[in-house]
Image (cartoon, rainbow, N blue to C red; front, side, top):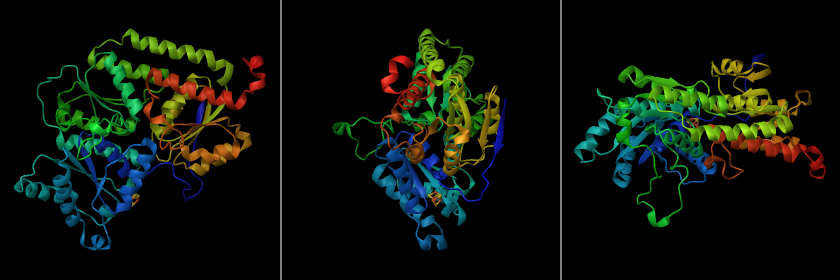
Length: 459
Ligand code: SF4
């Protein structure tokens, strides 16, 4: 029916649901083959991100930092950047360094573009010209981690992509996956591979954040595995179109359209659930002309079969609270409604203007409370209010204490998930992802609301 949009009723944020811009930028740079993020700021700005990423993905994460101290705040960060760039290039010789700014370097007014330009010439004179250096502005006070990701993708395109008059790669498309897990990126690849669509993933963390342990094949110096190559980024202008899986990382796609006439397709609804996946595949089909083949239709059918099996019996009408990044929350809201469940409250930690309208477009038969710039305290208060009748929470591990206090099942989605294993390596996108999400939610509901001794009666 409608959404009831409201904000926080207090200034202070208690347990934020978003983290800072540099993290999103680092995530994007780590998806480049032999790419290293260099944080132009103090050590904490890199340590906290490494900690956050390492506990979610359980992988080693390589991030460099130019290590600001008190004197840097007075004299600026040029010297720190000069030394850092030379040190990284001499020791690691990476393909790409993404110079990620922070609150401190932005506030003191570091001219990072100027610093990088002067370094490029100096490094060339010293015989080091094989590393691309891309400045990425991420003042954390101006946005969230997904804004940082968006800016990084855009900066990579603006700084690296070259003109391509001929469309060499006839039906190749670019895909901007957003802050998805390795299991999701692999699922998108699986769908495109199944349709024989060639693609460039901008950028690709599917192996970086999910690497096999194989000491004999360990590179020295260490780089995360996989990733899109710098050459591939240079040539994304030759593609037939760019699909941005999330509207919150669309700027790069728009830049490619404006500067290189590569059509942009922005997914308002991410490929989470049946409708979202249908729309994604139709968009790919429209761009490339490649058919949506039977293998994918079989996966769709299997998912629908499971949904039909469990929806009316266990899930229909159950009240759900969802929190996290807007892309995930929008997609999960759509899937939850396909299952006949009732999303009663959704929130993200940011102030995204179109988020309420996206939720409203999904809420045909239901009233949904949409909280703008929410925090974990709002989630807690809402769940603990018995009048709201919440039966399931979908969100990150941060809500585990709400689960301990109330006993209401928390099905872990989003970022970070650190108190369960395996979440990041499996998909929530695509038909197979929808099947997995349905299984996860149903199993939690069965464990909580269906007693073992009455099992036969309740089947
Ligand atoms: S909010 Fe600012 S100071 Fe804090 S970690 Fe992020 S960039 Fe660094």
